Length: 68
Image 1: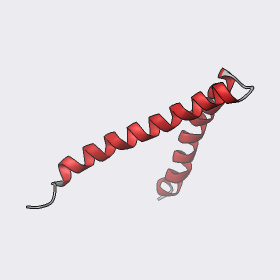
Image 2: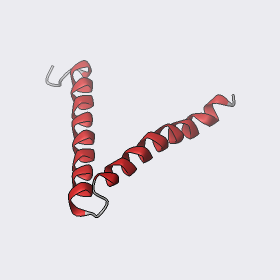
Image 3: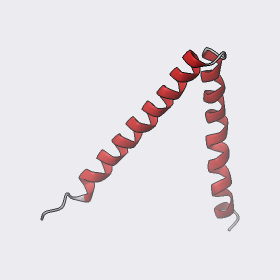
Image 4: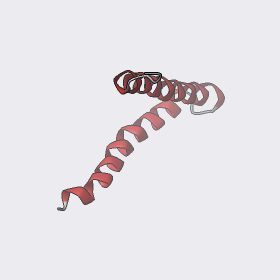
């Protein structure tokens, strides 16, 4: 009984992942806005790339599983 049960660890890990991922994206967007000549368009370009690339990569990963 010295270890934490799995149902407590998984939600905490998910919350930490979202916080780290969101914080990282926020830092990237701020740096692109302040330190480059792209201004707010840097964040728009990265955001659009994420919107397009994430579903594309997910569909490519799932494609071999659909063929069966």
